[in-house]
Image (spheres, protein in one colour):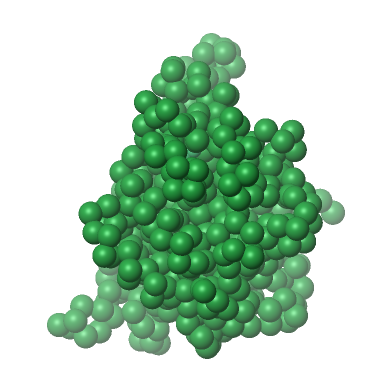
Length: 550
Ligand code: GLN
């Protein structure tokens, strides 16, 4: 019997930020736990070909895949919940879809036919969904359609889903995640906006199979009945999805309501009983979010502070999650403080406040703003032996600080900030020069997974427990090879290098002189998984917990 792949589309009703990404990840997880092979796709309605050209304050973190695709932060949630490594076939935007349709038209692939918005755009969307499904040999593909039902932007994606349903009525399903507000003056949960949202979806020719009712509280039976009647579905298909403190409780809550049973029944797939061993592992992990005994104060140095629609923490989402996983595994609870790098430029006294933290993280970044503040923080962390973890720009800052204050190269800098510096310790990569000259910014950095070789007897090597690693990158600049010997002579250790020895991938100070002063040119946060914390984050957290500052 040939296996029929099932497709579950996840759409959002009433408000944006209703939790479609975590719902998609959680549905994937509960189905994986029933023995099904799952993959996930994110559809973003915007015109940008990828998320790489957007400021984090516009759209949150840019999540980089193994193959270098610069995607939406939800892709990170899918990878983390589902322990998958996804690729560019799992991600599409309006811009990407139109770009390939137009390229095909230019190549005469439509053989003289008039190329139309409908059906040619939805057909391209369907083609991509099927490609991802075949790639993953999936039993179930969960597809998140970005945006909110009723808006203009995602209409062509809903059209694609509708067309798929016509072609394969038995294999295509819709889960609607919708919001039920509880206005404070009324004091009860209201179903009407969701009723309207379902009607808006009906107007696109789609009827949801399952409704997930998001709200401050659980759904009661009266409202479940109302939703059942007015949204045209049995009450058994209406599920309650109340607010939670930790996103990792959501799959557990879904299973308390037996959502995977309902989905398996609807899809008519043969699935196994829930795998209790792996479920218990997830439960233990999720419990740690509530139980972690000792708290660790982690200073996050950043600059993407103008929040707009997006939460500040969204700009550094994977870093925060990576820290949590390593903390939970060590029975600790992180308390994050958001410190603006620019503040340290003017006020040296502020630096003293950093002594109150167990560790400092300087995540990735771009451009000159905040750099002088960053350098002051790095110097303070080095001299006061506060555990410091630099990610990408955070490693470049370490090298600049070391060159300035230990080697005495006062104007040491990165070409990104000061192209006139005499001591360009961080310089543009050879392969990047033409990109910048020709204004080729989109998708043109050093992106995706690259191997690195680790030196014996270093923190890096000890943490990973192996000599060769592969990590994901996103940068244009690198440590300038002409300064390496001098920096090493002064005590900075380049403990990770590209296999050809040319690119410096990890810098650190020996443990004898500092409990943890380490930076990576790559982004280790993209590989941290809830049940498999990242070794470097774990080593950093261990150093933070040891409190051994002097
Ligand atoms: N701006 C730096 C570079 O392009 C670092 C990038 C980053 O932190 N992701 O090399």
